[in-house]
Image 1 (cartoon, rainbow, N blue to C red):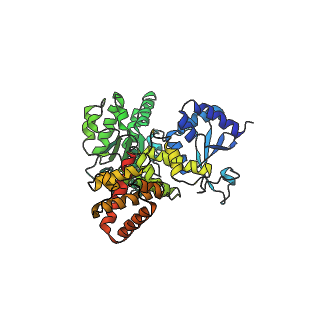
Image 2: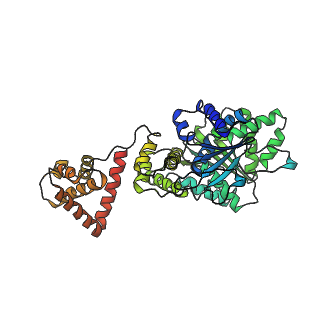
Image 3: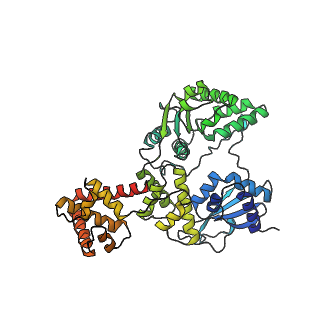
Length: 470
């Protein structure tokens, strides 16, 4: 009988051909095969982030590779490392024999993931297909998403009873549309357990409609969807140029809306830009509220980083969370990918999560990471703030405003660079290290006694970091 290591190596050979080298190294090399029992392969992944990333992005790839080795009834079972220090369990076992002392949890996935089958009306049983981990509690609010989040909360509190019907959420890839859609659904389930709710992608909706055509079951298909109280359809733009699917959706939309049922739609563009979509559908998409999601600002990105890492049991050093937030600027999904990879590398290599590890990980995601903060750059930024010439900071003038700017520049250089006191002094007209020490103490005393000056210093520190990362 083939062992689990051989099966997994064969799976990796299949997977390697279908993903790029970086994705393979990041998401598949860290996986360890644990056991095989008949048609079930158990694998060990570093953390919950890692598992969720695989499920969201690579589940079909994993399933297909496994089927080639174990047949159509193949099943995949995950064990997730729970030890914060990243220590591997010595013996990873099947869930029936795992004791409470083991640092793993097990998640079993069926080989064929069929969210729901359109049944006959008399036998109907609808599962919501929601991801329970996507909630409002872990959906960080910022200027970039405040309107959409607030509208989502309003819909969840009174589905079908607000002016936000449909709620049309749009934004570029990776900005949190799917998370928000699931959060609305999960909140509705909590507040209204008696309501029938369904989340479905437009692609699955289309495939199910095609299947109903083949089976002469279009009426069952329509009747099924008309039973839904809250219908969430993700990526509605993929209905473009699918005439028959648009026709049936138009009919379902009308019936649900007229009966006071709630519709939540997501898209990568606003209704007016949906090429290939019938005008009558676009008109209905505009009936409610269209709320866009923008790229998150620095503060929101940092809050997301710290929240997700805290959920995973990690307390990030400030410089690490800032570094990640500065470098991954436009895509929350990419930001999550960095965090998953960071935790995985920390776990597998038994390393602390520090700035050096963060730099190594981020190099795999962005072509150019932040530049080093230099004494010269600090001088330039401080001089600009005080409307001075940089040469005056290096000169010998004793004018108080210039002295304060010079001392502040030395203070920031000491705290924001790895330069020695001598090197810092050399950059200020050849001053010795004792002058740098005195300047740092003078600034420190001002910080303790002058709140206005303290705010100036904090803003300058943030501006220097943000500018050098741009």
